[in-house]
Amino acid sequence: MFEHLTTAPDDPILGLNEKFKQDQRPHRVNLIVGVYQDETGEIPEFQAVSEARRRINTNVKANYLGIDGDPAYSKLASELLLGAESPRFRTGNWVAAQSLGGTGGLRVVADFLARCQVTTTIWHTNPTWVNHQSIFNAAGLQTKAFPYLDAAGKGLDFVGMLAALEQIPSGDAVLLHGCCHNPTGVDPSPDQWQAIIDVLKQRRLLPILDCAYQGFGDGLEADVLACRLVSQQMDEAVIVQSFSKNFSLYNQRVGAVLFLTKDQLQANTLRSQVKAAIRANYSNPPQYGAALVRTVLADTELRANWQNELESMRLRIATLRRRFSASLQEKCDHDFSHIAKQSGMFSFSGLTPEQVTHLRDEFGIYFVGNGRMNVAGLNESNLEVTTRAIAEVVGRCAVSAS
Ligand code: LMR
Image (cartoon, rainbow, N blue to C red):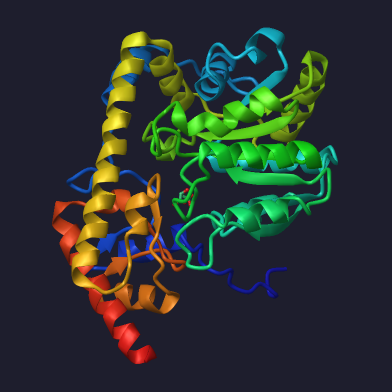
């Protein structure tokens, strides 16, 4: 039965990370996966999460959660996106469900859209996170791309993007990154977001906002501007949330999906379908990670502490961006100023696949093949070696190309 199988390609992000773990070179640098690392290269635990662990340890129950998870958690998660004052929470035209991280949330959305025949096609930015297409394709939906980056690969091709959105057939879904675009770090401005949403409204397109990096761009509130505009101006939309990064709970798989509906009746029907989609997939979610998030978000003191720590991470990444960009500018003729302007954990360096391979093979510095780097993997001890290696690789490629 298994004779015909051929080997699947390694995942461009997590598969490469496995290769990194096997690399024995002491000076190797991991800029692959989107995880926040501190100055020592460790993934820190938030103080508020440590305290939440102490508080809930005696309180963990063994029984199954409901199919859609812990409702108190999901409400707090949704409030973090829309603001606790959002009229949606008074009128009831929303449905939220706990999910297995952002990836699991996207798959719940994909399964729901496919089984209920809401739409057949998901449009995504070019480029987008390497797993987006696979998730929607796995549910039987087709994916198509629209332009996002300009020709230089450094900024938003806003005109091209808007023109493409205007051509999308009504009833299709458009997958956007709520903030901190992965892999480019290039986000629309507030005015550009409004123009995008105007097109979505006019064309009757369903927005799916992937919001995996809230707090790492311009701040916890600023990063959900697009979510809030959509909630205020559109009847129907989907938002997917992850707490992997902003709670540093990568292996707990904590996320949520939020569906915005026309009214409460529609919300009730939709909830039944979302639960059916989840039940056919993993039945119901685990308790512990969501309990940690709920404990922090529900407690004023822990929440403030978490926000402060998250803000200091955000500021540290912004400083690393500036230092990295300046250090590159000193060493090469290439223009790397865009790196300082990008937002969130990732930078689209502009390095070619060939240059990325050189960096990895000769210097032990790991970028994703498309040139994406995790800025949060830089620190005092690896920043200089990384920029020196890039300067050498870029210089060498420029010479060999000429
Ligand atoms: C990333 O883009 O590096 C993260 O979202 C981790 C992943 O699952 O790919």
